[in-house]
Image (cartoon, rainbow, N blue to C red; front, side, top):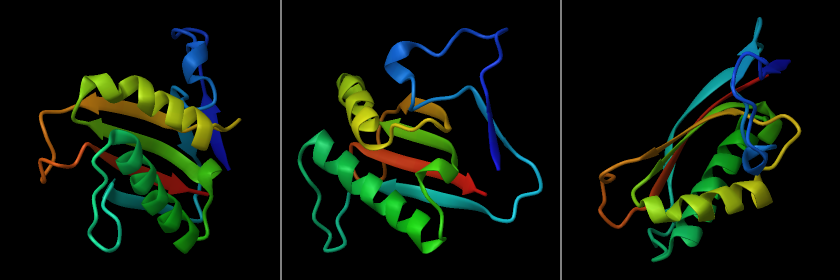
Length: 132
């Protein structure tokens, strides 16, 4: 079982991130621990949406497919790292996360604004550590 900790000695999780962020996660004696390579918003046929939301949803689809392949669920995500190439997309990322991945058991999260990804058309990459 994954334990989620938000110690009172740290800043409280802001309301806008409640359900999509926790300060830390811990898994003692895991049966399964899986690291996912970064997933980008490229469809299986190679198509890339031109907008952030389209790419974000596609990358999330890939993460969910990997979770399913390992017989894991969203609540099994321990750590999620979001790499975003445009700062103006951060508010939309938060909205999408709240709509799609809101949970009473959120993962530890890091979000980075980076100069670019391998393909300059890619706007987001999502990396996950999951286990149970």
